[in-house]
Structures are given as C-alpha cells and as structure tokens.
Length: 117
Length: 255
Image (cartoon, each protein chain N blue to C red):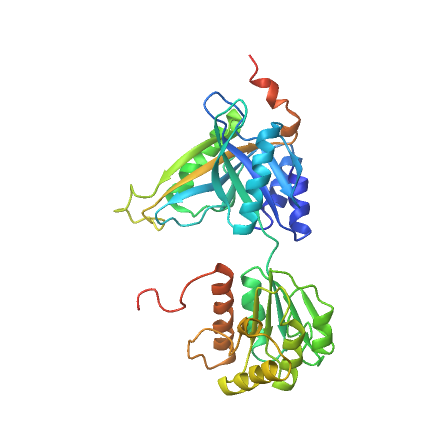
C-alpha cells in the first residue's frame, strides 16, 4: 500500500483521471479496516485493494462513474446481504467507501467559486 | 498534492490528509476538498475556510496521537453547520533494530520485512552481519553493538530486539536503550538470567522500577517455541501485540 501514491502519480502524469476509493467507516466485521485504499482507472483497472469480493466490484463500478462525472461520492457496501452466498468476502459488516476523483491540475480549479450562484 | 504525499512517504515522516467527504447541507464546503497537515501546519490543500482549517489542525493532532484514520464530524463556526471530514493518518513506518545476527535474527528480519518494517541488523561479526545472510533488510551494520546503538535515532516508532550471543553483550546494549523513546524493547534470556540482570540494574545502577518494567524479557509470546524460526514467530507476534496495543496473545477460541 505504501507505494500506491507513486502508482497514482504515474497515471496522473499521463493525464488520466483516477478514482481513489478509501474505506472511511465500518460497522461490524469487514475484510479490511478504515484507511484501506484502492485506485481505479477509467478502464476499471485496480491498484491496491479494499478487501476483494462483490463489495470491491461494486465500488469499482461506482468509481468508473465517478471518473466520468468527476464528482466524489460515498458508497455504502453492505456485506450482510449475501451472507448465504459462497463469496469469500462475506463478513457480515457494512463499510462506507469514499470515492474521490483525482486528476492533474484538480487543485488549480477554483472550487470555491464554482458554487457561487 | 500527490507530490507532497509521495515526499512524506519517502521521508518516513508522519502526516494527516484531511478530505471533506460531505460538505454539509448547502454545500458549505466542496466535497473532495483536501488539506495536508504535517508538523502541525497545513502543507498543501484546497480548503480555504479558515475556521475549518483550524478545526482540521486540531483534529489532525488528535488523530496522530491516536494513530488511527477516522471519519469525523466537524462544526463550521461560520456560517455554521456540520461537515464530515475523513482524516487519513500516514504514520512513519515502524523500524525494527535487531541486535545480534545469529540464528533467530534471520527469520525475524524476514518476518519484519513482510510486515513492512524498516529493518536494521547489527552485529560485531561480519561473518554474521552481512548481505548474504540478510539480503532483504534495509541496513546491516558491523561494529560494537552498544556503540552502534548510541548513534542510532530511536523514536516512538522504533522496536528493538536484543538477541546477541550472550548476556555479556545484551546487557550493555540494554543499558544504552533503556531510557530511549522506543516503543518496544525486548531481550532474550532465561527467566533466571533476566531476573539476575534486572536485579543488578536496580541495585547497582539505580534504574527505576518503571524503566525496568518496560523491557520485554524473557522475550516473545508464550508459544512453547523451540526452533529459531518458531522463536522468531513468538518475538514478531509480541511486537505486533505491542504495536496494535492489545490482545492477550492466546487463541481467539480459547479462554
């Protein structure tokens, strides 16, 4: 995980937009803890992991949407749902994942002014 | 921002990245806005609201103390309202110093590398402290062990294991690091030898009881470990327990 920022930078330098998904809160038993991160490219390639399984696949799908809209969002991943399934990622908990679009020059955007009507 | 994050990781320092996850009802703050806190100051970021910056600085300090990333609801003094901010705590990587490069040191160093520790091995014998025996550690130092410890920077992220070839060597090393800021000090030895050592330290050298209490000796969790590899597991398991601040060390299913 230590070098995820290095990998992210490579993509940003190529002018690509990435979505960085971070587990920001959890309830119950989850495959990974708060702080686990993964980055998703516009083609759905994944760097890092937030625990694998269906939850990660859902987040990946949402991340591709976030790259398109460049609007961050919080996704709730419910691992209670598929307790009867054979998925290895069944843990019985809930996790909130923040998906944040990153692109080179994002910080230069005058964000403050955007919301002034 | 990405450049600053990478430089923080390369420099092995601690920092906190605060990200607005929910900017409040009327979009008080843009979600996704960020603030990077290092050494109690804002180093980079896109959060301009001064009230929010102050609240973030304060909370970042608490997060660093706690060593845990967390989603926190912060009050915005003006115009009022709540914003959800995620604090990502980036800790300087833990450092393990293995003093004594014998049989236990080899598997111990390997385990520590697997756990992403920065690993230094010290011994006064080049036949033992060398790159052939320790290909994947960060530093191998040959020299008088106690003297070498004197010159090493020891922080609250440092773990030190004394496993030299004899108490004649362990004790001067222990004396050197007893009062250091290290998170973990472990020393190998039988109960009897350790007791004798602590007795001497207390009676002859006037070390305070609470200083002596810090030392994990005999070293390791009680696993009835026999081989050097098993003993290394017992030691690294104890280090994990101290690092994560809990656990009794028994089986989760047995009490």
